[in-house]
View 1: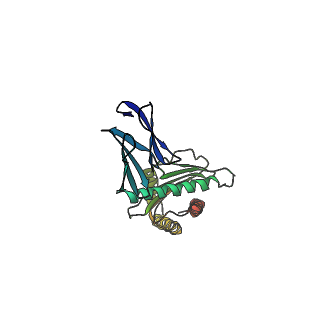
View 2: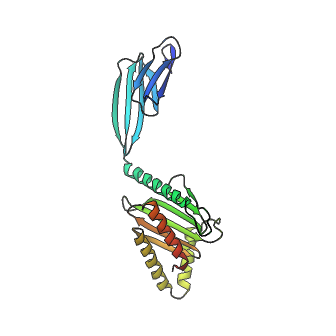
View 3: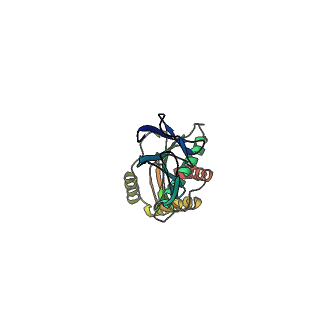
Length: 249
């Protein structure tokens, strides 16, 4: 940064949680601005230094401003609380990322009957989880539900020895189920039994059914959850769903 007639470096001292001003020539006076906890921006104008620091803190953020003259004297500090209008949404997204990350970690330590390690992959946005294991392929998507504060969970389970095949689109699964239910005997009974099975599994997970489809070796189960279960409970629930899937209606 250029200060009147010489260059100055402003850098953060992480150990001291401070900003230090170091002149690059014999001119200028080194000084310190204390209480800086993160990245900052700075400007020099009219013989005055101004630095700004913004630190997210849970549901809000603190905007901190330092002002001083070119010798570091007359230091003034102001702190402004910045309210986040999307605090609830951000908090929910953090909950989803933490929950799926913990689930992925537990999955990676699990073993199937072939003793093949699971390979969970958490999506970049933290709302999706893909798993390839000895049973097949499992996909989870967790998003905001229509009910404020609740979670919408979409589980797609495809069993088989060729899990590398791409997931069938939901529209194809719905079409296959429609054909199966409309063109074969016992459609109503099968639909009622499938919904009852889904409701039972939803009850086990502490949620309610939003939808259920099945086509061949693929089941799509959509639930609304008041809270995400702990990773151990979540994995035990998923394991039961996949174990019952071959005999599901």
